[in-house]
Length: 223
Figure (tube, rainbow, N blue to C red):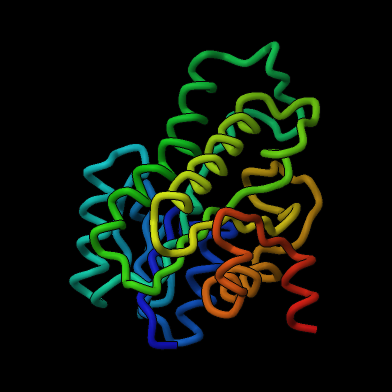
């Protein structure tokens, strides 16, 4: 796979699985997270950089690193996210302003910063993937401002899709067991990494652009 791929939030969970999957396929992967130490045990062929999606200057430097290391960016996976509290047990009525602000800043504004700073370095046939979930589209009790922030992330993806000449869309892997889901049962991150690779390389561009690709679409296309 002769591609340059940038993955934000790659120190754990889905982001780590995505970065490793692309690297195994031969892509040049540039991965970031807030905690540089948490990136240390990624495969050595992955280029790592400490970067916080809440800081646009960190995002600018990350994309410059990717362009310097691998040329134009072919795939951006805007995956970094946080969840303050216990998943499913954070009703919006009890939400703190601090949690609201950081959810929106990281999960929403962070997607904006990652894509905006990648734009000058994107290949003509690049694809941008935003990691999200059904909670962004279907409200459920107990997910508070996390759900709001994921809806913001998806709206941000749609607006970039409208304004850019490359496909920008949402990838929804369903429930995945990670630290963010706080023990809620779901698939292992490694089981859904292939969905992101498919969305980045084989999925019809018109279905990705401004849309949502989920496990069902992947399975129907690859069975």
